[in-house]
Length: 191
Image 1 (cartoon, one colour):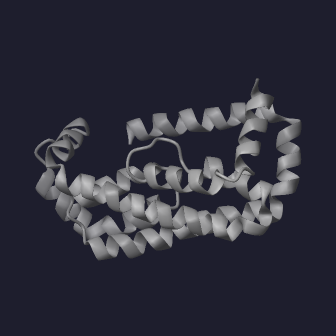
Image 2 (cartoon, one colour; image 1 turned 45 degrees about the horizontal axis):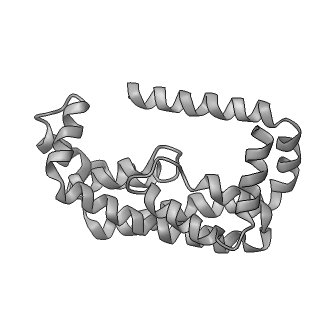
Image 3 (cartoon, rainbow, N blue to C red; image 1 turned 180 degrees about the horizontal axis):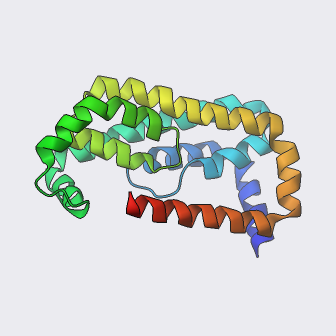
């Protein structure tokens, strides 16, 4: 079953609808969708290494545009933001949150935008904090571009060898990926 799913993803990555799908996933992941665009970017670059930087550009542009939606969700949906702060144990801490974000928000965007931590958290909290929209945009372009172009470059040059290894031990690498994913979710819960 795992092999069949892998083959389907690789087939989709090489299809004529792959670029549109990549843009949609990149856009929605930045504001509400749970699956990161790397899941599509990596097999697309493996399938078409000659288009690696084009795909990274599509990912970056769509991600930043989706980040704008996330920003406006946070900015205009104050009750949701208050609810999120309450979940984190800071129901009365909006003023201190905004002060903290004014001081550290740029670094939050730059660091978390490169990591696998869901970018939607950054976009929505940036809006909630009423962080400078212009700074949010340029920091998002820098950090998301760095992430996607680095991913595309690594896969373009090292992907075929890695792909061969992954295909040989697909079950093992899937298990490792699941452990990392669950570990990341658990770590986020306790941070």
